[in-house]
Image (cartoon, rainbow, N blue to C red; front, side, top):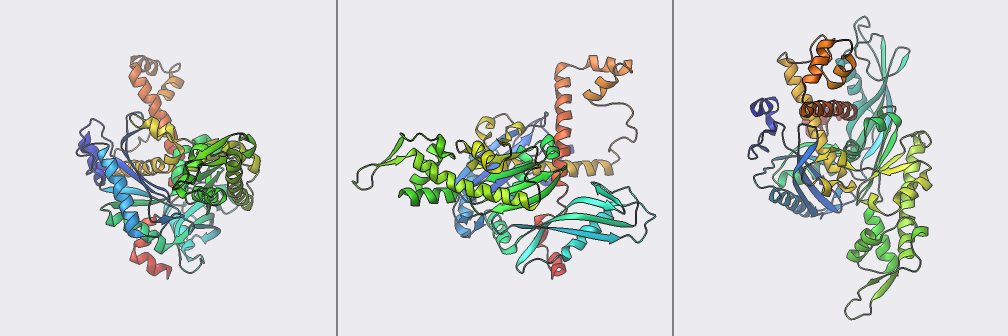
Amino acid sequence: MQQQSDMLNPQFQDQSQNLPSENPNPIVVGLDIGTTKVVAIAGRKNAFGKLEILGFGKADSQGVNHGVVMNIEQCIKSIREAIRLCLESRPGLEISEVYVGIAGQHIKSIQTRGDRVREKPEDIISQEDIELLIRDQRQTYIPAGDRIIEIIPQEFTVDHASSVLNPVGMSGVKLSANFHIITGDKSAIGNIKRCVDVAGLRTRDLVLQPLASAAAVMSEEDLEAGVAIVDIGGGTTDMAVFYDGMLKHTAVIPFAGVNISTDIRNGLGVLKAQAEQLKTQFGNALASEANANTFITIPGLRGLPPKEISARNLAHIIQARMTEVLDYVVYNLKLIGLDKQLYGGIILTGGGAQLQNIIQLTEYVTGLGARIGYPNEHLAGSHAEQLSNPMYATCIGLILRGYHDFEMGSMGFAQKLGMGMPESTEAPTSQAGMLQDASANPEAAQKLELLSEEEQRMQEANLRGNRRKLAFGKLFDGLKNRFMSLFEEEEDEEMR
């Protein structure tokens, strides 16, 4: 079994060869390089489709400001420290390649529409037709110094048929689509990749952080109902909006946890470390909910008397900055006309989502329902309780992205060998299928009775896992061009 898995995806071999296990799945490592922290998590899916965390490392981030690398040497040290702690947490673990999250205030997005008249309209539309339409969007005008990172098709139109999610197999003369194009500064992206390379790691892929966070905290129902993922990090607040089962908008808001700490430091006259501690331990996003008679005592400096801080004054400072961030969220939703139509509301994640009463403030400012997004649905085994924290959603999402690539690669390899899906789908093969067909098919009912309880649980888990794969597939499959293609010389020549 292990040999088959290695053969299907040989690039994952090195990271799991020193951890003998009956589990044939590869080990995938996510690396979240943030403004305040660098997190490395190594995980592997079990038989139930849950992530078993095999290694975890967290280090203070140095040299990164608002998601942009400002000091390469310091950033490399932070990455190495996080990887070292991850390796120490699990003896025998080896890490050679990582999925890296990317954000920063240089990330922008635009909406475009593309049309293409087909040369042979009598032929059915193929994936190649879609790729040609996507390639045409690389001629879209963008500001000097920026580069197109991702071109994400949203919905297609075939002649007079609109709102088509997948036109493959249809026929028509004119193929059109709306596109969401994400751009970024190539130098800023190159610096992140350079830091990872010098740290002795191979960048498997660079993934937009709001999309990674969305994969970790969003369900298929959320994708259908329409939600806004708001990831309140240390340096930036990342936003991704989904509606009608597709990505509609992304945005990077240049205000987040660091700005709150700076406001506390300047407003209350305390040290940077004290401001961060006040925020994390006593921070409240609603001043009206803070006790006016509660005071926090801070030790004095060099013989000075202790200083007392009002809990309500602290909350006023936090509420003012968080209201500004949420005003940006509302502004972005109004830009795309979805400020009143997201039935799934807002999912808050990231370290800033841990502030007291942040849900109440979000609902008051935006007028939408809100909840905290935890990645715990995907976790199992050791570290599960510790990592069921919104600040680790991005890193968990990076691992899910790695598994999406692995599973799609394995499926393609199996189909090449003639091991793909059977042509006939008359006989139900899942637990749900056998339950539906048991009354009409005695043979299926007999097969169901012979299954052990453990096998039934595994089949039900696989069924749920397949549904989640469909949701994540919709999220990730739209990313037709990877970040890594930015560093290919041929693509640079085309964009010139």
